Image (cartoon, rainbow, N blue to C red; front, top):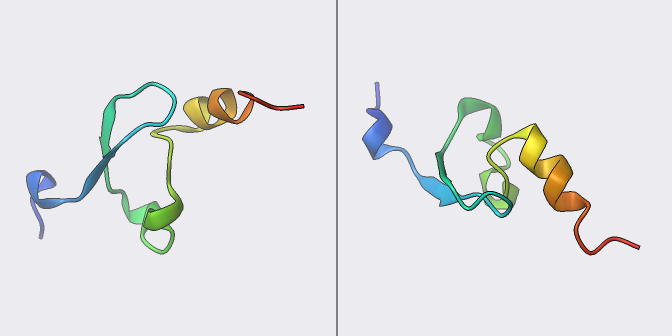
Length: 49
């Protein structure tokens, strides 16, 4: 079992808060940009047509 401190982390592209790796992102961690669905929806709306 890994400790939470040992997991990789990133900074959310929308809210700029740090977030840690989650099991559901295991296969797609390189492409994860947002900490939550709410931030993903809000961030995707920026700069749109």
